[in-house]
Length: 465
Image (cartoon, rainbow, N blue to C red):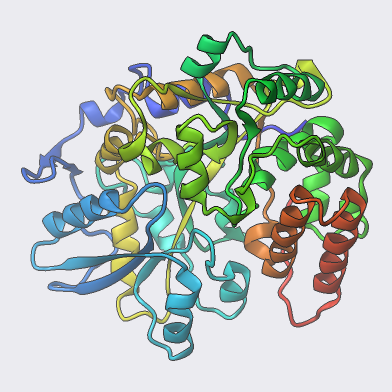
């Protein structure tokens, strides 16, 4: 069993969602800035040495969280440093948009490398494109007196940004991953969320007989079924060492019996006709819109779902997240929850100091409160949800974390480390869920991709424990 650095009790304390988190910041001097309301700690205005009148450039993936929160952070940046600015451009498919600029030696100063079609982070690190964020981590926090920037972030929340011990990016969102359904629909129909996968299949049969498709997923992006179902199911069946072995390119790691069992459990959704017709051709927002119309009962996603679909969510839908059931009811509460949405600074950008300073503003306590209140999600900033009333969806996520206790599962690192393996996993997942590949064929394809990466001397390798 793998234990995250964040327990149930610690999560509540860190977010401040229960009204905790009052400490040193309440008694040490701070300077209130009127426009954004941030209270800058004494001596924490410009520890990184940003030059006066710096005009910096930021390019950011605009997905489920939108990018209004980034614009708010840019307002903080401009107010703390009058005369300087950070531009905010929200884009899709980061790789296609930025790869030509990186090759030309003209990257932006800071970016969010998330979403479909993002850049290969491992390759960027290997080629020396990404700045060492050590100076940022040890700089004074902007609005938490007496603490460094790194000390204000949830313990363990930035581990995935470590490459051979060097901090290459910071995660700005603490996300809970699982299975979503409409509580009002389930109450209306008298359905109860199952505690085992056998119970899930039995409920799917009941749902199907009612005229509603039991499942849909983000068809053109089948990786949602990776983090929504496969990752936690494998951990619950066979233990979390399996994903460590996958990340460390251990020969035969994908051939673990728990992987085969979990894939066959997922394939049963296709074999029994439980997946909504037309799902493979839908984008993520199209399938989520169908789910909001109650054409399907379940969909996998992270806690960005509520904000991403806020504008078209029907009143009274009451979306809630649950952990995926597996072979053992006693492990139902185990759930994937980790920090993600990687923001990084280019080492050869025009203003790398501005990139780091922007991240100091973005992950400030004031920015985290704005994020919790307006986006409905949590930044991994201590006290970042202090005094904020959370939405019903976020409340269900917090309940799931509480129920998990010490059994909060981290996500594997291979998607960010080895794009060739991740690409094969996505393709094979799509094939599995449409009946074009068996569980055994999935494993053969992905293990083959892992073997090729391990044997390719040109690919930089990483390790974790």
